[in-house]
Length: 260
Image (cartoon, rainbow, N blue to C red; front, side, top):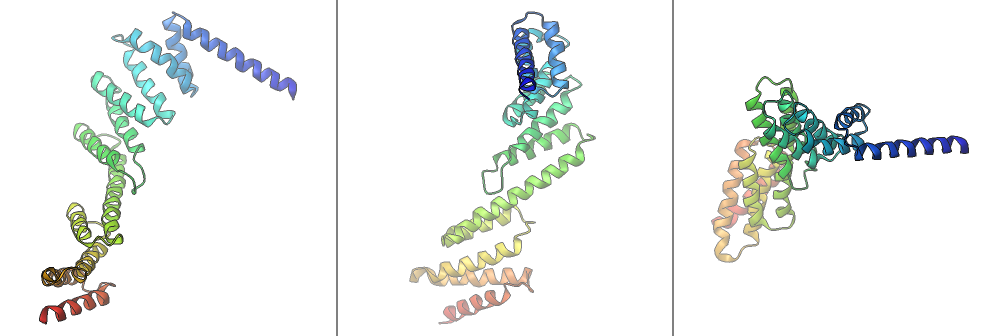
């Protein structure tokens, strides 16, 4: 066992020394060849180390687009999506006529997509990805990646819907009913087809009622009337809602106060 470990350590040391020597070499043809070999072997760290050295040397040559393209992929495969997105976008802008240009434009968007977090967090990357993919599809309408693009857009739109819903509902949960009514209405306006539409409309009704309940005297009439209006809007769209019993109680209480 000790002999095996010694042999493996020796091989690792030899390989490391060989790579360090290659990094210091001025044989750029060999560096290019070895970079492609490392890439094919999925040794992306070593491959990218060589690609980075080759970028300024081969800039303007026929190998330049290959070097920059594979370097971007090295970052992607190492799950450095922020740098990958940057390098693919830089490639798209620099090598517009390269046979890799379309793939690079897609991969720039895909790297941004991989940066998109769970719905409770900031969704700037989701919004950016949707925009990038929209531009990609307008440029390459017959792309073989079209179905995947549509899947990604749908997934990210669902995230945005979820984020909008959760952010608006937070005001309600914090008992800030005035802000809740505004935020919930904004969520509906932004995403009218949301799967949370029924719940959001009910929460608007309930927040309106609770806002009226907790208002100063001179505001109560106006806000109870708003509750009645929200009740009609809600029941017209969801006459068989599971929230109907509670909605009718708020409507009845509001009407009683308005009649007095």
